[in-house]
Image (tube, rainbow, N blue to C red; front, side, top):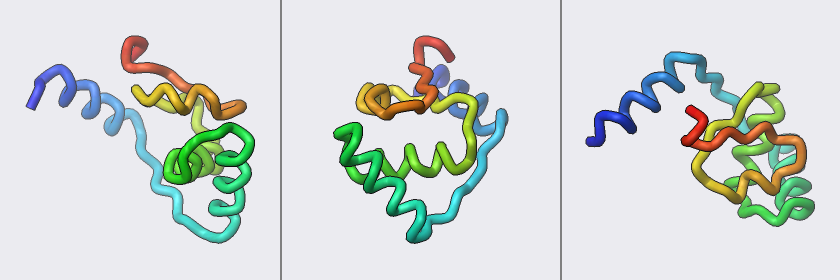
Length: 79
């Protein structure tokens, strides 16, 4: 394991992690996100869950999330 990567994830998980359940409304929101912002289905589910949790920041190295309208994406370089 890379110590710097482990440290970054430990920081993120210590900062706060909220689990959001999947239901029909979340899937409907994800479907809309996928169609509107041209992201993959699982990425759209992650984005929909982030919106439901009202996240302040969405930390990811996946640049596809930058296409999700209104999602406050923060890249690893800003961690």
